[in-house]
Image (cartoon, rainbow over all chains, first blue to last red; front, side, top):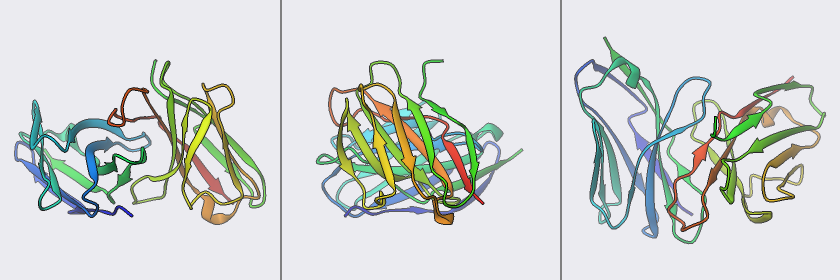
Length: 112
Length: 115
């Protein structure tokens, strides 16, 4: 079955710096890759997603890149702010199933 | 608020008791999902409904777990004879019924603690 690995598990950056979180997936049939932000006591909130027919997608300070050949996808946050501090999860889904397979999460701390 | 609603937010119960959680999806979202999240981990898929039909179940969903969505709107997840290992956050998500790549929107979950 599909497996998603996520790195790093923790990331600390200075306010204003960029943060990059990387994920790899195992099943080449995966074709949809969302990213979620989870704050303490809350459910995961979708922040950006990318489909396998696209290599890059950007939404203001957030961008996601996808390398289908290497089965890698990454989240890039520029000009980080303290309110970006949270746990971020990547996920993957195959066309044959509606379930999301999540990575183990990255705890991002943005130091003011 | 038109997001996914889950009740209760917290549930504390003794081992061996039965518990039931409720999820109200976003209006007109035909697809509804249950996930379980333990501390420090990503959510794990449990089961999925399209309207009232339960179409996929994870091996994580043991015989003690049952989920229903009788009228294709809200859903319930019941755990019978709870065990310590059932302590987790139970998350519900919903998505529209158009194609497989519609985003899933999550509720804030029900945190279950087994004493």
